[in-house]
Amino acid sequence: DAGVIQSPRHEVTEMGQEVTLRCKPISGHDYLFWYRQTMMRGLELLIYFNNNVPIDDSGMPEDRFSAKMPNASFSTLKIQPSEPRDSAVYFCASSFLHSTDTQYFGPGTRLTVL
Amino acid sequence: QKEVEQDPGPLSVPEGAIVSLNCTYSNSAFQYFMWYRQYSRKGPELLMYTYSSGNKEDGRFTAQVDKSSKYISLFIRDSQPSDSATYLCAMSAMKTSYDKVIFGPGTSLSVIP
Image (cartoon, rainbow over all chains, first blue to last red; front, side, top):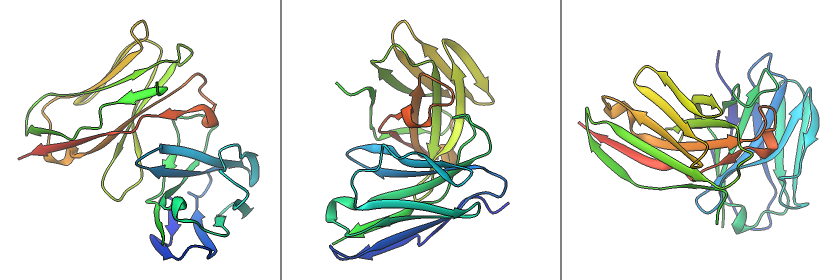
């Protein structure tokens, strides 16, 4: 099993540009999560999906952030326009049960907005 | 006061030492407690998962929960250089409340050979 796959691993962009982060969950997992990790705020849940449907997006910081899951094997997190304060590591995770003890995290995308 | 507090370290110990990592919390509703290990440039991986108060042991790792003191600990026996990582505590009131899981900021651990 390849685990959760995220791309790109690193992204450097300029303020105002659109950024798209990608995630492929573990096959068979029907929950998908997007997290953000910063030194100041730690690890925070942004949004999660169940069977491709967004369940809770209360953690999405602003309208500049949007997430989609067009099918069971792919999800995107988009930031438009990006700002320097969006610089963070963004993790995708997936789970096969509705339980907090079954999440598997991807390696993360390190985003730097100049 | 933050909901979950954790000494950020860094903590440096010699190989073979017993390591104690701790978190305190303020919300008495928390019942599910987790410890994650995060290697540099990697995602967190779940290490220990406990419910309510008590101890849970898994190999060299022991998780301890004291709900009366709102204090949880992770003990690592016979620490190895491969244990060098950041350890995050996390907790929630419900087993299925992904959006209500609160993570600590993490403690950086280095085990020196």
